[in-house]
Amino acid sequence: MRQLSAILDSMIEGLIAIDTAGRIVLYNQQAAAIIGCPVKDALGRPVPDVVPNTRLPHVLASGQDELNQRQEVGATTIITSRMVVRDPAGAVEGAVAIFRDVGEVQELAAKVRTLQDLRELSEAIIRCSQEAIAVSDEHGNYVLVNPAYSALMGLSAEEVLHRPVTVDIRQGESVHLRVLRTRKPIRGARLQVGPHQKEVVVNAAPLLVGGELRGSVGVIHDVSEIRRLSEELASAREQLRRLASKHTFEDIIGACPPIARAKEMALRAARTPATVLLTGESGTGKEMFAHAIHHSSDRRDGPFIRVNCAAIPDSLIESALFGYEGGAFTGARPQGQRGHFEEADGGTLFLDEIADTPLAAQAKLLRALQEREIVRVGSSVPRTVDVRVIAATHADLDSLVAGGEFRQDLFYRLSVMPIRIPSLRERREDIPVLARTLLARICAEYRIVPLRLAQDALDLLIDHPWKGNVRELENLLGRAVIQMQPGDDVITRASFDRAEGAGAPAPGPGPEVPQRRFAELKRAWERELIEGALARHQGNRAATARSLGITVRNLYYKLERHDLLRGRAG
Image 1 (cartoon, rainbow, N blue to C red):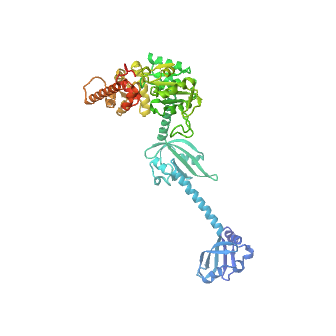
Image 2 (cartoon, helix red, strand yellow):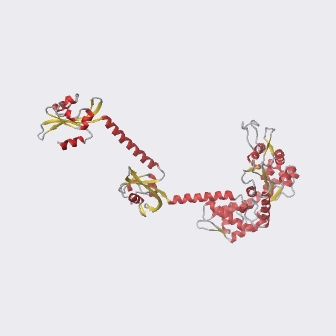
Image 3 (cartoon, rainbow, N blue to C red):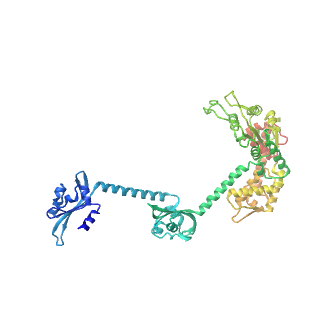
């Protein structure tokens, strides 16, 4: 009986048993706690005296069990099952009730539900992760893998779940087993995994619950993806380095006397606050010189503002350069707008294609250079600015001044330090080193293996007329790189032959083809058209450009290409 009492008292449910007379013969501690009657006071008493609304006598009389019934016992609600007790012959010997406090049941159910919710949430997070994740139990079997794992490994969840963690290893030791053995995290383990023997890096850690080892979790990274990202990062850093270093004189390639003199004069100008005028044909690198001057000056920490005067409509150039007050014109911002001069305060303002500046704006530009102050459009209040101006043009400013299209006083103010950038035709000895440097940069940008230039290709480049200068050279090399066949590592004269349809230089005299005849006819027609327009407007280039529907900058480019600049004034 002592053993039976100990067993009954260890139960989490309350228990009451009665004999055929309806007296309590079994009554455990949990029943005493729920009903509120001690064991010694309940044993031997009729059950209704202890539990007034009990149905045990009814079950005893009917011989029918009542399962999972709700019952109120004082202030407590219980769930009870009442059952008949029979002897081996089937005769009724008594009845028993097993019951439990509903509040405890609900609390336990809530805890179970919370744990289930947490488990489902954790599994959902793992499955949604873009990282490949695998979880093992304490016995070294996979219990959870996410879709990213299957995509990386080439193994479905069904192929690995509930199987040893070595199932996906092709070379190396399983990090899960090492973690389970040492109970310590592992980082950066290199393995080959999956049917394709993919190289991966794995980080793993033990799963400890209350100090008890319950398994391990591993995060797998594709080495090829890491390598790709590293290469992209290195490429980005290289591009950033070039963005910073292209503004230095060291990146202006060439050592022949013409370019050496230009660099020497530019470096001398950088040490002074003087206004600089950069002249030279299109594509010679005037903007690179402007950047180099700025970054070699004491204003290197200030802003560098580049303005293409040819790209701004005549009606907007004053407000763009000098800013405007609120409501100065239709569409103006109510709060006004700073101009490029104010943006460049304390730094350098690079005015590219200065020849395309309208005469009205030239007067205000002259005042800004002379007085170091500007007046916003719509205002009469001058604003002091500390700006170093570098101007550039490929046009013949002397001719524009003579024709009244450019102010003479502004020309003199700009050309305090005139620097002429030589054309590529004047520095042919620099073409080999310049071509190799540009080719290496292009290969890096196109993400292809470095290419070499054969001697016959260099000879062709040296002999080319280069009307477009360095810009044309870079464009030509880019087209040749695109035309290269898989496996080629050397650009030859034949490489330029393949790119000839895209505008590459002709490798020498050969049989005339219809495409060349058409290009020659088109060139002659364009020259005749421009000459006729110039004659109609008495050599006035601004009026000529307007009649042709092109910018003055484009007109100068065409005049230069057709060798029409000489002897043309106005």
